[in-house]
Image 1 (cartoon, helix red, strand yellow):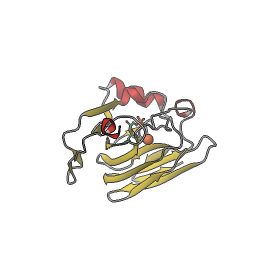
Image 2 (cartoon, protein in one colour):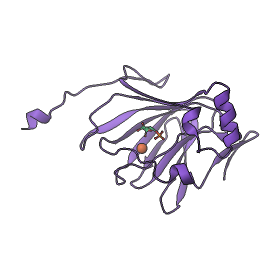
Image 3 (tube, helix red, strand yellow):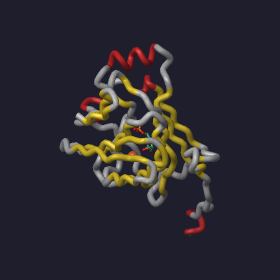
Image 4 (cartoon, helix red, strand yellow):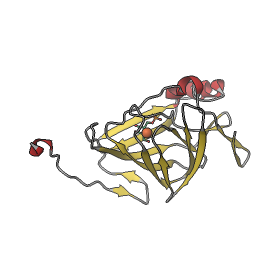
Length: 187
Ligand SMILES: O=P(O)(O)OC[C@H]1O[C@](O)(CO)[C@@H](O)[C@@H]1O
Ligand SMILES: [Fe+2]
């Protein structure tokens, strides 16, 4: 019986100097146009889209079955930049199975993991190379790049967790992170 469930073990290589997952077989790409409704300055986002719709972030994965017991893992690479004064960020999501937690290890760049609950709690956890962030069950999570190079994180979460955008497209997160001159402001 268990023989039918057995999957071949495998290894994967990350070039730690460059923070690149080698031989990935799944690749998600989100451009500026995927981010409509997420930034405070919608006009600035529209301008960016008109100017060539630049790459916003990518996710590189070694795909495994999206099933109970498995663990999805990969690298997320978020470009540096701002929309108006707001730093580039990911859409952010809850998990479809809300009890599913996630771990992020920052390999490169500087940023924050913004986390919020449906009750309106919100936290910002700083990330830089070597820092691990634990996203507990029930917290929606969004990465924000506050540096001037790509923010690259290695993540692991339960295979069956799924993604749920819930109230994020309508309400966003209670906190936004802005570039004010040389300063980072969390408001
Ligand atoms: O849903 P978002 O915020 O666009 O992020 C998508 C990606 O983020 C991850 O959670 C990894 O950071 C992946 O599971 C997912 O493909
Ligand atoms: Fe997640």
